[in-house]
Length: 151
Image (cartoon, rainbow, N blue to C red; front, top):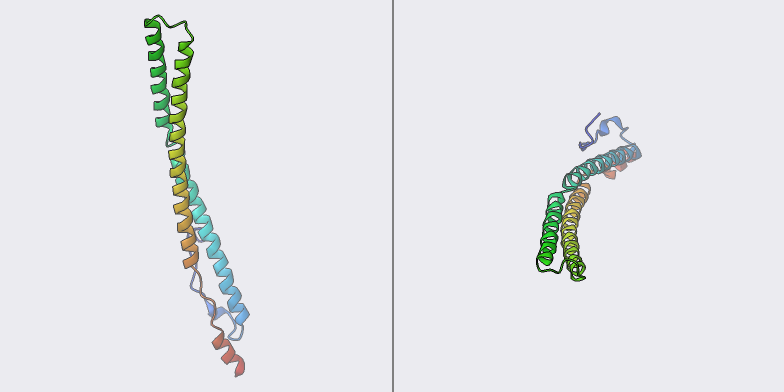
């Protein structure tokens, strides 16, 4: 069995009767359908592999954001306590500010990683479509069959 990444060809018209244009046409069509399936299968595997490899690429950056904002929130709370403002409503306002900044940083990171993911998907899709457009078995030329039919 050929690899799912193999493109089959060229056609063997020797197995088709000389006057059997439809047989030759159907053989070419069958081969093109097989090639289409092989290309589709190959790119689906490649797509899953590449996109699977970049899944979670932002994990360390997310951990860094969490750590940085946890540190800043703790430092801000300690600052308020040192100034005698630890039991006031100011502390909740300061914590909301840190939480808001953290959410913005996480959203920005999500936007960047989703843009990268979309770029990879687009590049793989364009490569697949280009390959599918270029690879095909030639369909039989009807002229020899017409000449044979006239004999």
